[in-house]
Image (tube, rainbow, N blue to C red; front, side):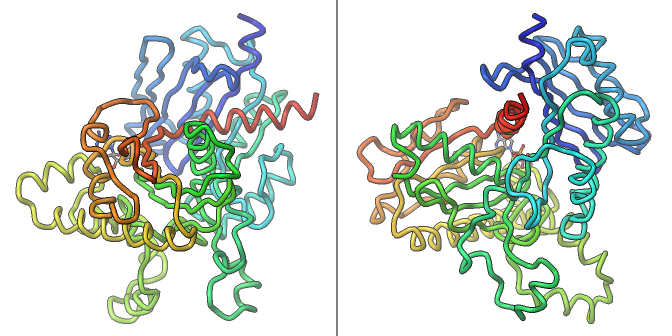
Length: 403
Ligand code: ADP
């Protein structure tokens, strides 16, 4: 037990009011425990912790991220994993924005902490929360290497034509304005799995990946390297999401300021929390959206149609950018679980070699699989993402270099 336990990595995904975590072995992928602390800072905060076959739930006021993480450690100890005693190989932290500075998994020291804090200007909703998780974990496990894995890293090398916004180049340079892209850990992991599943070297595969969760993004990947992605300077651009609009005429921002007298923070909130599916239909959860569509709710139907329309627009753009594809893959909560989204996204494209087999698409399988007919030129796949495993592996690679 001792040695195996010490090889595990604790992965922490610290959000503005939650901490998701997993303790896992990066080699075998076996998860020893996982959980979530929710509603940090509110009266009804709670922890849900799963270890082996048991789930522990507790409702208790959790003031901040440090208190949240302390509770996580206490819960680990109470359920048979004293992290300080049994040890972990590393802590891997998901960090949303690495800016131009960080484009590979990075061992955290005081300089890295300060730089992630500086990058908060680019990701005000995310980086401060990520940092709170990092600082708490450093305080609670002082002897353990901590590694930051950046959501933007995979897209750092996007071609200049894809990453450049057509605004005053001097203004862009002064303020770090470029397309950074997000969900990179997922796009990298899933596209790597696609090459494995096709039994081909990643350098031989042209592919499009749709990561469709609450946040949603698409990427075009040529020979293992991303050549375009839908999210931009921030995670607002691109596809329609649960609460974010994706692409908008930027003139809308100025118009809202002038006509609706919204200040910039109100506009930011409108775009980050009250737009997308929720703004159009009142709900951001896809299952609830479907229930409403089935009961004849027109606003829900329109929200769905806008969602699919945008997705197909990106599909068309990326097909042309790549000059044709070998694979199109769906991942994350909606992508993995909604046969209807997959079917509607790819309907009527047989002339491009893109077809979905209805029976394979409908199968409620949880594993990676092909849903196109075996003889169709383009492989359409469903591949479950696993950002925690990717972060754990990246963290292990960094600490191996320290040995
Ligand atoms: P995130 O990690 O971005 O918070 P997830 O990848 O967990 O999000 O995806 C959340 C989304 O997945 C929600 O909109 C949810 O409704 C949707 N989802 C989960 N299960 C299903 C399902 N069985 N059918 C349709 N959508 C689902």
